[in-house]
Image (cartoon, rainbow, N blue to C red; front, side):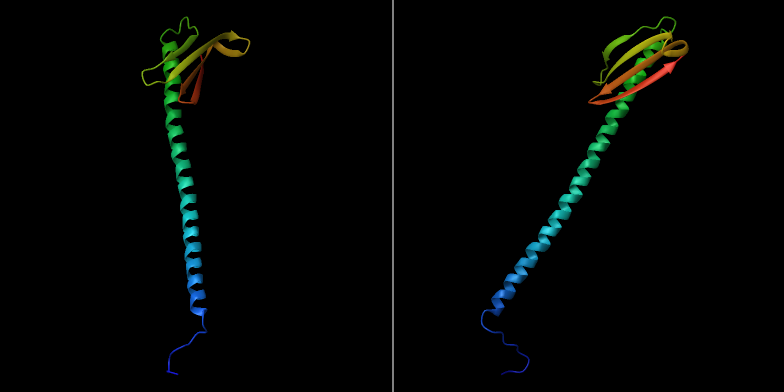
Length: 125
């Protein structure tokens, strides 16, 4: 026997090669699972940011409805659903004082919508 060499029984070297391939596959599967998890979180955040942008546009559509009513505040009336140039819509409901409206004159509610997001503004005067 030569000094410094280790002799393995027949077939032992092949079993060790199989273990290293198994470990490589397990490590790759773990890395892939982590990558899928991170991408799922990232895509969820992208969707949240997109819907927040839609929400802002819906709010400004509701504001446009309020502004339109205030231009004729002496005799306001309901406004049917109206489309804006960016695709957003608004609808305005006017309630005279009394009943469910505790305002001095009118309660006005404007609802803006854009791509599934909706926001409302309500004023009293």
